[in-house]
Length: 493
Image 1 (cartoon, one colour):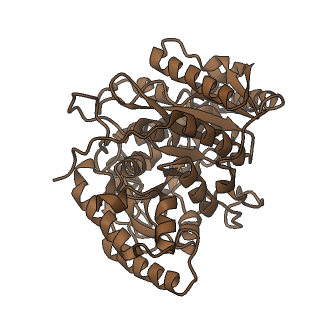
Image 2 (cartoon, one colour):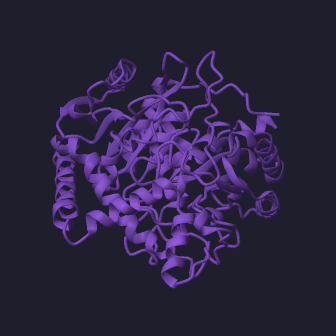
Image 3 (cartoon, one colour):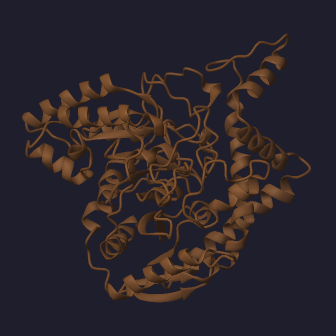
Protein backbone atom coordinates (compact mmCIF):
# COMPACT_ATOMS: atom_id res chain seq x y z
CA UNK A 1 0.00 0.00 0.00
CA UNK A 2 2.66 2.47 1.10
CA UNK A 3 4.72 2.08 -2.05
CA UNK A 4 1.86 2.99 -4.41
CA UNK A 5 0.44 5.79 -2.25
CA UNK A 6 3.85 7.44 -1.85
CA UNK A 7 4.18 7.98 -5.61
CA UNK A 8 4.01 11.45 -7.10
CA UNK A 9 1.17 12.10 -9.54
CA UNK A 10 3.62 12.15 -12.46
CA UNK A 11 5.21 8.83 -11.44
CA UNK A 12 1.78 7.24 -10.93
CA UNK A 13 0.49 8.34 -14.35
CA UNK A 14 3.67 7.05 -16.01
CA UNK A 15 3.41 3.76 -14.10
CA UNK A 16 -0.18 3.34 -15.23
CA UNK A 17 0.65 4.05 -18.87
CA UNK A 18 3.53 1.54 -18.80
CA UNK A 19 1.17 -0.95 -17.06
CA UNK A 20 3.47 -1.56 -14.06
CA UNK A 21 0.28 -1.49 -11.99
CA UNK A 22 -3.39 -0.89 -12.70
CA UNK A 23 -5.61 2.01 -11.69
CA UNK A 24 -7.66 -0.51 -9.70
CA UNK A 25 -4.58 -1.48 -7.66
CA UNK A 26 -3.55 2.15 -7.22
CA UNK A 27 -7.05 3.20 -6.21
CA UNK A 28 -7.48 0.29 -3.78
CA UNK A 29 -4.20 1.27 -2.10
CA UNK A 30 -5.48 4.82 -1.62
CA UNK A 31 -8.90 3.63 -0.39
CA UNK A 32 -7.14 1.51 2.25
CA UNK A 33 -4.90 4.43 3.21
CA UNK A 34 -7.96 6.66 3.67
CA UNK A 35 -9.69 4.04 5.84
CA UNK A 36 -6.57 3.78 8.03
CA UNK A 37 -6.30 7.56 8.37
CA UNK A 38 -9.80 8.47 9.52
CA UNK A 39 -8.27 9.93 12.66
CA UNK A 40 -7.04 12.86 10.53
CA UNK A 41 -10.66 13.72 9.60
CA UNK A 42 -9.45 14.83 6.15
CA UNK A 43 -12.34 13.23 4.24
CA UNK A 44 -15.94 14.11 5.10
CA UNK A 45 -17.27 11.63 2.53
CA UNK A 46 -15.47 8.59 1.14
CA UNK A 47 -16.65 7.26 -2.24
CA UNK A 48 -14.78 3.93 -2.56
CA UNK A 49 -17.37 2.23 -4.81
CA UNK A 50 -17.42 5.16 -7.23
CA UNK A 51 -13.61 5.31 -7.15
CA UNK A 52 -13.22 1.62 -7.97
CA UNK A 53 -15.76 1.87 -10.81
CA UNK A 54 -13.90 4.89 -12.24
CA UNK A 55 -10.61 3.00 -11.86
CA UNK A 56 -11.94 0.00 -13.82
CA UNK A 57 -13.13 2.32 -16.59
CA UNK A 58 -9.70 4.00 -16.61
CA UNK A 59 -7.94 0.65 -16.92
CA UNK A 60 -10.17 -0.18 -19.91
CA UNK A 61 -9.23 3.11 -21.60
CA UNK A 62 -5.53 2.53 -20.92
CA UNK A 63 -5.80 -0.97 -22.41
CA UNK A 64 -7.46 0.40 -25.55
CA UNK A 65 -4.87 3.17 -25.97
CA UNK A 66 -7.33 5.98 -25.14
CA UNK A 67 -5.72 7.20 -21.92
CA UNK A 68 -6.20 10.82 -20.92
CA UNK A 69 -3.51 12.97 -19.23
CA UNK A 70 -4.69 11.92 -15.73
CA UNK A 71 -5.97 8.47 -16.64
CA UNK A 72 -6.46 6.34 -13.54
CA UNK A 73 -5.03 8.83 -11.02
CA UNK A 74 -6.94 8.94 -7.70
CA UNK A 75 -7.66 12.48 -6.46
CA UNK A 76 -9.53 14.12 -3.58
CA UNK A 77 -12.11 16.88 -4.06
CA UNK A 78 -12.64 19.76 -1.64
CA UNK A 79 -16.28 19.64 -0.49
CA UNK A 80 -16.90 23.06 -2.03
CA UNK A 81 -17.00 21.60 -5.56
CA UNK A 82 -20.39 20.31 -6.66
CA UNK A 83 -20.17 16.64 -7.66
CA UNK A 84 -23.13 15.14 -9.50
CA UNK A 85 -25.10 12.77 -7.27
CA UNK A 86 -22.48 12.97 -4.51
CA UNK A 87 -23.22 14.91 -1.32
CA UNK A 88 -21.80 18.44 -1.32
CA UNK A 89 -22.07 20.41 1.92
CA UNK A 90 -19.39 23.16 1.98
CA UNK A 91 -18.94 21.60 5.46
CA UNK A 92 -21.99 23.50 6.70
CA UNK A 93 -25.11 22.15 8.41
CA UNK A 94 -27.26 24.41 6.27
CA UNK A 95 -26.72 22.36 3.10
CA UNK A 96 -27.73 19.16 4.87
CA UNK A 97 -27.66 16.14 2.55
CA UNK A 98 -27.59 18.23 -0.65
CA UNK A 99 -26.71 16.14 -3.72
CA UNK A 100 -26.12 18.31 -6.80
CA UNK A 101 -27.66 17.29 -10.11
CA UNK A 102 -24.66 18.73 -11.94
CA UNK A 103 -20.83 18.63 -11.89
CA UNK A 104 -18.58 21.63 -11.32
CA UNK A 105 -16.62 22.60 -14.42
CA UNK A 106 -13.26 22.03 -12.72
CA UNK A 107 -14.06 18.49 -11.54
CA UNK A 108 -15.71 17.71 -14.90
CA UNK A 109 -12.38 18.64 -16.54
CA UNK A 110 -10.51 16.26 -14.22
CA UNK A 111 -12.89 13.36 -14.92
CA UNK A 112 -12.68 14.16 -18.66
CA UNK A 113 -8.92 13.65 -18.39
CA UNK A 114 -9.35 10.29 -16.65
CA UNK A 115 -8.91 11.12 -12.96
CA UNK A 116 -10.58 9.01 -10.26
CA UNK A 117 -12.58 10.52 -7.36
CA UNK A 118 -11.75 9.14 -3.90
CA UNK A 119 -14.19 11.36 -1.99
CA UNK A 120 -14.91 14.82 -0.60
CA UNK A 121 -12.44 16.66 1.59
CA UNK A 122 -12.98 18.68 4.76
CA UNK A 123 -12.75 22.49 4.84
CA UNK A 124 -13.65 25.48 6.95
CA UNK A 125 -17.40 26.10 6.66
CA UNK A 126 -18.07 27.86 3.33
CA UNK A 127 -14.26 28.25 3.09
CA UNK A 128 -14.32 30.84 5.88
CA UNK A 129 -11.33 30.18 8.11
CA UNK A 130 -7.58 29.68 8.31
CA UNK A 131 -7.35 26.57 10.48
CA UNK A 132 -10.14 24.17 9.40
CA UNK A 133 -11.76 24.59 12.82
CA UNK A 134 -15.05 26.07 11.57
CA UNK A 135 -16.13 22.90 9.70
CA UNK A 136 -19.45 21.35 10.76
CA UNK A 137 -17.62 18.00 10.57
CA UNK A 138 -14.95 19.04 13.08
CA UNK A 139 -11.33 20.07 12.53
CA UNK A 140 -8.77 18.30 10.35
CA UNK A 141 -5.55 17.17 12.03
CA UNK A 142 -2.29 18.08 10.34
CA UNK A 143 -0.29 14.89 9.60
CA UNK A 144 2.78 16.78 10.84
CA UNK A 145 3.63 17.03 14.52
CA UNK A 146 6.41 18.96 16.20
CA UNK A 147 9.44 16.90 17.20
CA UNK A 148 8.91 15.23 20.57
CA UNK A 149 5.28 16.39 20.77
CA UNK A 150 1.91 14.68 20.37
CA UNK A 151 0.03 17.97 20.17
CA UNK A 152 -2.42 18.10 17.26
CA UNK A 153 -1.72 20.93 14.82
CA UNK A 154 -3.90 22.67 12.25
CA UNK A 155 -3.33 21.86 8.57
CA UNK A 156 -4.37 25.43 7.77
CA UNK A 157 -7.54 26.51 6.04
CA UNK A 158 -9.80 26.62 4.36
CA UNK A 159 -8.45 23.77 2.18
CA UNK A 160 -7.18 21.90 5.25
CA UNK A 161 -8.61 18.53 4.26
CA UNK A 162 -7.04 18.79 0.80
CA UNK A 163 -3.58 19.66 2.16
CA UNK A 164 -3.68 17.03 4.92
CA UNK A 165 -4.79 14.31 2.48
CA UNK A 166 -1.98 15.08 0.04
CA UNK A 167 0.64 15.34 2.82
CA UNK A 168 -0.47 12.01 4.33
CA UNK A 169 -0.42 10.25 0.92
CA UNK A 170 -4.19 9.65 0.93
CA UNK A 171 -4.51 10.94 -2.65
CA UNK A 172 -2.13 11.88 -5.47
CA UNK A 173 -3.44 15.45 -5.49
CA UNK A 174 -6.51 17.43 -4.53
CA UNK A 175 -8.61 20.37 -5.59
CA UNK A 176 -8.67 23.47 -3.41
CA UNK A 177 -10.06 26.98 -3.54
CA UNK A 178 -8.27 30.17 -2.57
CA UNK A 179 -10.16 33.33 -1.57
CA UNK A 180 -7.48 34.89 0.64
CA UNK A 181 -4.81 32.20 0.89
CA UNK A 182 -6.87 29.03 1.36
CA UNK A 183 -4.68 26.95 -0.96
CA UNK A 184 -1.29 28.49 -0.20
CA UNK A 185 -1.44 28.65 3.61
CA UNK A 186 -2.47 24.98 4.04
CA UNK A 187 0.19 23.96 1.51
CA UNK A 188 2.84 25.82 3.53
CA UNK A 189 1.63 24.23 6.79
CA UNK A 190 1.77 20.67 5.38
CA UNK A 191 4.90 20.62 3.22
CA UNK A 192 2.90 20.45 -0.03
CA UNK A 193 2.68 22.64 -3.15
CA UNK A 194 -0.36 24.81 -3.82
CA UNK A 195 -1.12 27.32 -6.56
CA UNK A 196 -3.87 29.89 -6.87
CA UNK A 197 -3.97 30.72 -10.58
CA UNK A 198 -4.93 34.05 -12.13
CA UNK A 199 -8.53 35.02 -11.39
CA UNK A 200 -10.57 33.58 -14.26
CA UNK A 201 -8.05 30.88 -15.22
CA UNK A 202 -10.25 28.15 -13.66
CA UNK A 203 -14.03 28.24 -13.90
CA UNK A 204 -15.97 29.02 -10.72
CA UNK A 205 -19.12 27.36 -12.10
CA UNK A 206 -20.36 24.68 -9.70
CA UNK A 207 -18.14 25.81 -6.83
CA UNK A 208 -20.10 26.94 -3.75
CA UNK A 209 -19.47 30.70 -3.66
CA UNK A 210 -17.82 32.56 -0.79
CA UNK A 211 -16.60 35.88 -2.28
CA UNK A 212 -17.14 35.85 -6.02
CA UNK A 213 -14.53 38.45 -7.00
CA UNK A 214 -11.82 36.67 -4.98
CA UNK A 215 -12.57 32.90 -5.18
CA UNK A 216 -10.34 30.84 -7.46
CA UNK A 217 -9.85 27.09 -7.78
CA UNK A 218 -6.42 25.49 -7.87
CA UNK A 219 -4.56 22.26 -7.01
CA UNK A 220 -2.66 21.06 -3.96
CA UNK A 221 0.00 18.51 -4.90
CA UNK A 222 3.18 16.76 -3.76
CA UNK A 223 5.54 18.51 -6.18
CA UNK A 224 5.70 21.59 -8.40
CA UNK A 225 5.40 19.43 -11.52
CA UNK A 226 2.36 17.60 -10.11
CA UNK A 227 0.70 20.97 -9.43
CA UNK A 228 1.42 21.98 -13.04
CA UNK A 229 -0.10 18.75 -14.38
CA UNK A 230 -3.27 19.24 -12.31
CA UNK A 231 -3.65 22.94 -13.13
CA UNK A 232 -3.42 22.18 -16.85
CA UNK A 233 -6.42 19.85 -16.54
CA UNK A 234 -8.40 22.12 -14.19
CA UNK A 235 -8.03 25.26 -16.34
CA UNK A 236 -9.90 26.40 -19.42
CA UNK A 237 -12.51 28.87 -20.63
CA UNK A 238 -16.06 28.13 -19.52
CA UNK A 239 -18.99 30.03 -21.07
CA UNK A 240 -21.06 29.15 -17.97
CA UNK A 241 -18.84 31.45 -15.86
CA UNK A 242 -18.93 35.12 -16.94
CA UNK A 243 -15.58 35.75 -15.20
CA UNK A 244 -13.82 32.84 -16.96
CA UNK A 245 -11.06 34.15 -19.23
CA UNK A 246 -11.27 33.18 -22.93
CA UNK A 247 -7.58 32.29 -23.19
CA UNK A 248 -5.69 29.15 -24.19
CA UNK A 249 -4.30 26.87 -21.49
CA UNK A 250 -0.49 26.69 -21.69
CA UNK A 251 1.39 23.42 -21.24
CA UNK A 252 2.20 24.21 -17.60
CA UNK A 253 4.37 21.10 -16.94
CA UNK A 254 6.75 22.14 -19.74
CA UNK A 255 7.75 25.23 -17.72
CA UNK A 256 9.05 23.16 -14.78
CA UNK A 257 12.80 22.72 -15.16
CA UNK A 258 13.23 25.64 -17.56
CA UNK A 259 16.21 27.88 -16.89
CA UNK A 260 15.42 30.96 -14.81
CA UNK A 261 18.70 32.69 -15.67
CA UNK A 262 18.17 36.38 -16.25
CA UNK A 263 14.74 36.54 -14.62
CA UNK A 264 14.26 39.53 -12.31
CA UNK A 265 12.75 38.55 -8.96
CA UNK A 266 11.28 41.25 -6.74
CA UNK A 267 11.57 41.20 -2.95
CA UNK A 268 8.89 43.50 -1.46
CA UNK A 269 10.11 45.31 1.66
CA UNK A 270 6.57 45.51 3.08
CA UNK A 271 6.50 41.74 3.66
CA UNK A 272 9.02 42.04 6.48
CA UNK A 273 6.23 42.09 9.02
CA UNK A 274 6.95 43.41 12.51
CA UNK A 275 7.44 40.55 14.95
CA UNK A 276 7.94 38.05 12.13
CA UNK A 277 9.80 34.98 13.47
CA UNK A 278 13.52 34.91 12.68
CA UNK A 279 13.07 31.49 11.05
CA UNK A 280 10.64 32.92 8.48
CA UNK A 281 13.05 35.77 7.65
CA UNK A 282 15.97 33.32 7.42
CA UNK A 283 14.03 31.08 5.01
CA UNK A 284 13.13 34.09 2.86
CA UNK A 285 16.80 35.14 2.79
CA UNK A 286 17.74 31.58 1.84
CA UNK A 287 15.20 31.65 -1.00
CA UNK A 288 16.80 34.83 -2.31
CA UNK A 289 20.24 33.15 -2.26
CA UNK A 290 18.91 30.06 -4.07
CA UNK A 291 17.46 32.20 -6.85
CA UNK A 292 20.70 34.20 -7.15
CA UNK A 293 22.59 30.91 -7.57
CA UNK A 294 20.09 29.88 -10.25
CA UNK A 295 20.94 33.03 -12.21
CA UNK A 296 18.10 35.33 -11.19
CA UNK A 297 18.59 39.01 -10.53
CA UNK A 298 17.14 40.10 -7.18
CA UNK A 299 15.41 43.49 -7.18
CA UNK A 300 14.08 45.26 -4.06
CA UNK A 301 10.53 46.52 -4.72
CA UNK A 302 7.88 48.41 -2.78
CA UNK A 303 4.17 47.62 -2.52
CA UNK A 304 3.16 50.58 -0.33
CA UNK A 305 -0.53 49.72 0.05
CA UNK A 306 0.17 46.21 1.41
CA UNK A 307 -0.55 47.38 4.97
CA UNK A 308 -4.16 48.05 3.96
CA UNK A 309 -4.67 44.64 2.32
CA UNK A 310 -6.00 42.75 5.34
CA UNK A 311 -8.65 45.32 6.37
CA UNK A 312 -9.62 45.72 2.69
CA UNK A 313 -10.02 41.95 2.31
CA UNK A 314 -12.09 41.66 5.48
CA UNK A 315 -14.53 44.25 4.14
CA UNK A 316 -14.79 43.01 0.54
CA UNK A 317 -14.96 39.25 1.32
CA UNK A 318 -17.70 39.42 4.02
CA UNK A 319 -19.72 41.85 1.87
CA UNK A 320 -19.74 39.38 -1.02
CA UNK A 321 -20.33 36.47 1.36
CA UNK A 322 -23.40 38.10 2.91
CA UNK A 323 -24.83 38.51 -0.58
CA UNK A 324 -23.91 35.00 -1.79
CA UNK A 325 -25.18 33.25 1.34
CA UNK A 326 -28.59 34.97 1.22
CA UNK A 327 -29.78 32.03 -0.93
CA UNK A 328 -29.59 29.62 2.04
CA UNK A 329 -33.02 30.22 3.52
CA UNK A 330 -34.46 26.73 4.03
CA UNK A 331 -36.88 27.05 1.14
CA UNK A 332 -35.38 25.12 -1.79
CA UNK A 333 -32.73 22.73 -0.46
CA UNK A 334 -30.75 21.84 2.64
CA UNK A 335 -31.79 22.43 6.24
CA UNK A 336 -35.25 23.81 7.07
CA UNK A 337 -35.96 24.69 10.69
CA UNK A 338 -39.49 24.98 12.11
CA UNK A 339 -41.12 28.37 12.58
CA UNK A 340 -44.61 29.82 13.03
CA UNK A 341 -44.11 32.39 10.28
CA UNK A 342 -42.06 32.58 7.10
CA UNK A 343 -39.70 35.04 8.77
CA UNK A 344 -39.21 32.67 11.71
CA UNK A 345 -38.40 29.80 9.33
CA UNK A 346 -35.73 31.97 7.69
CA UNK A 347 -34.30 33.13 11.01
CA UNK A 348 -34.29 29.70 12.67
CA UNK A 349 -32.85 27.96 9.59
CA UNK A 350 -29.97 30.42 9.29
CA UNK A 351 -29.33 30.52 13.05
CA UNK A 352 -29.15 26.72 13.27
CA UNK A 353 -27.51 26.12 9.89
CA UNK A 354 -24.62 28.59 9.92
CA UNK A 355 -21.68 28.31 12.32
CA UNK A 356 -20.37 31.23 14.38
CA UNK A 357 -17.66 32.36 11.97
CA UNK A 358 -20.02 32.33 8.99
CA UNK A 359 -22.63 34.27 10.98
CA UNK A 360 -19.95 36.78 11.99
CA UNK A 361 -18.93 37.38 8.39
CA UNK A 362 -22.52 37.67 7.16
CA UNK A 363 -23.16 40.30 9.85
CA UNK A 364 -19.98 42.22 8.95
CA UNK A 365 -20.89 42.04 5.28
CA UNK A 366 -24.46 43.21 5.82
CA UNK A 367 -23.14 46.09 7.95
CA UNK A 368 -20.58 47.37 5.42
CA UNK A 369 -23.17 47.18 2.63
CA UNK A 370 -25.88 48.99 4.61
CA UNK A 371 -27.08 52.39 3.42
CA UNK A 372 -25.29 54.44 6.05
CA UNK A 373 -21.92 52.70 5.76
CA UNK A 374 -21.59 51.59 2.12
CA UNK A 375 -19.49 54.61 1.11
CA UNK A 376 -17.39 54.63 4.27
CA UNK A 377 -16.47 50.94 4.11
CA UNK A 378 -17.26 48.98 0.95
CA UNK A 379 -16.68 51.75 -1.58
CA UNK A 380 -13.49 52.85 0.13
CA UNK A 381 -12.26 49.24 0.29
CA UNK A 382 -12.78 48.88 -3.46
CA UNK A 383 -10.72 52.02 -4.07
CA UNK A 384 -7.90 50.71 -1.86
CA UNK A 385 -8.11 47.38 -3.70
CA UNK A 386 -7.44 49.25 -6.94
CA UNK A 387 -4.37 50.88 -5.36
CA UNK A 388 -3.08 47.47 -4.23
CA UNK A 389 -3.47 46.13 -7.80
CA UNK A 390 -1.69 49.23 -9.14
CA UNK A 391 1.25 48.60 -6.75
CA UNK A 392 1.69 45.16 -8.29
CA UNK A 393 1.33 46.47 -11.85
CA UNK A 394 4.07 49.00 -11.17
CA UNK A 395 6.36 46.36 -9.63
CA UNK A 396 5.82 44.02 -12.59
CA UNK A 397 7.10 46.70 -14.96
CA UNK A 398 10.58 45.92 -13.62
CA UNK A 399 10.38 42.33 -12.29
CA UNK A 400 9.09 38.97 -13.56
CA UNK A 401 7.87 37.55 -10.23
CA UNK A 402 7.91 38.30 -6.50
CA UNK A 403 9.32 36.14 -3.70
CA UNK A 404 7.78 36.40 -0.21
CA UNK A 405 7.15 34.19 2.83
CA UNK A 406 3.97 32.10 2.53
CA UNK A 407 2.85 32.36 6.17
CA UNK A 408 3.88 34.31 9.29
CA UNK A 409 4.53 31.04 11.19
CA UNK A 410 4.57 27.26 10.91
CA UNK A 411 1.43 25.26 11.76
CA UNK A 412 -0.03 26.14 15.16
CA UNK A 413 -1.99 23.94 17.56
CA UNK A 414 -5.72 23.43 17.11
CA UNK A 415 -7.46 25.78 19.52
CA UNK A 416 -4.34 27.95 19.93
CA UNK A 417 -5.87 31.06 18.37
CA UNK A 418 -8.37 32.86 20.60
CA UNK A 419 -11.83 32.36 19.12
CA UNK A 420 -13.03 35.40 21.06
CA UNK A 421 -10.60 37.52 19.05
CA UNK A 422 -11.02 36.53 15.38
CA UNK A 423 -8.46 39.14 14.29
CA UNK A 424 -5.63 36.92 15.61
CA UNK A 425 -6.81 34.24 13.16
CA UNK A 426 -7.28 36.71 10.31
CA UNK A 427 -3.62 37.77 10.64
CA UNK A 428 -2.61 34.36 9.22
CA UNK A 429 -3.61 35.70 5.80
CA UNK A 430 -1.28 38.70 5.93
CA UNK A 431 1.05 37.46 3.12
CA UNK A 432 -1.59 35.87 0.90
CA UNK A 433 -4.64 38.16 0.57
CA UNK A 434 -2.90 40.68 -1.70
CA UNK A 435 -2.73 38.25 -4.64
CA UNK A 436 -6.49 37.62 -4.41
CA UNK A 437 -7.32 41.33 -4.21
CA UNK A 438 -5.22 41.91 -7.35
CA UNK A 439 -6.34 38.71 -9.15
CA UNK A 440 -2.75 37.50 -9.57
CA UNK A 441 -1.35 33.96 -9.73
CA UNK A 442 0.52 32.92 -6.57
CA UNK A 443 1.92 29.66 -5.27
CA UNK A 444 3.40 28.24 -2.10
CA UNK A 445 6.01 25.51 -1.97
CA UNK A 446 7.89 23.83 0.90
CA UNK A 447 11.41 25.15 1.41
CA UNK A 448 12.55 23.94 4.82
CA UNK A 449 11.74 22.92 8.38
CA UNK A 450 11.61 25.12 11.45
CA UNK A 451 13.32 24.35 14.78
CA UNK A 452 10.38 22.09 15.72
CA UNK A 453 10.72 20.06 12.53
CA UNK A 454 7.60 21.60 10.94
CA UNK A 455 7.39 22.67 7.27
CA UNK A 456 7.85 26.28 6.21
CA UNK A 457 6.90 27.59 2.77
CA UNK A 458 7.92 30.31 0.36
CA UNK A 459 5.44 32.17 -1.86
CA UNK A 460 5.82 33.32 -5.45
CA UNK A 461 3.50 35.93 -6.98
CA UNK A 462 3.39 36.47 -10.75
CA UNK A 463 1.96 38.65 -13.47
CA UNK A 464 -1.59 37.92 -14.66
CA UNK A 465 -1.74 34.70 -16.70
CA UNK A 466 1.99 34.03 -16.24
CA UNK A 467 1.67 30.89 -14.14
CA UNK A 468 4.31 29.37 -16.40
CA UNK A 469 6.95 31.75 -15.00
CA UNK A 470 5.92 30.78 -11.47
CA UNK A 471 6.32 27.08 -12.32
CA UNK A 472 9.82 27.72 -13.69
CA UNK A 473 10.93 29.73 -10.64
CA UNK A 474 9.25 27.28 -8.26
CA UNK A 475 11.03 24.42 -10.00
CA UNK A 476 14.38 26.11 -9.38
CA UNK A 477 13.51 26.71 -5.71
CA UNK A 478 12.26 23.14 -5.30
CA UNK A 479 15.51 21.78 -6.74
CA UNK A 480 17.63 23.99 -4.46
CA UNK A 481 15.59 23.33 -1.31
CA UNK A 482 15.52 19.56 -1.99
CA UNK A 483 12.65 19.22 0.47
CA UNK A 484 12.16 15.49 1.06
CA UNK A 485 10.80 15.50 4.62
CA UNK A 486 7.59 13.60 5.35
CA UNK A 487 5.47 13.52 8.51
CA UNK A 488 5.94 10.51 10.76
CA UNK A 489 2.93 8.21 10.49
CA UNK A 490 1.06 8.34 13.82
CA UNK A 491 -2.52 8.23 12.54
CA UNK A 492 -2.92 4.58 11.45
CA UNK A 493 -4.76 2.01 13.52
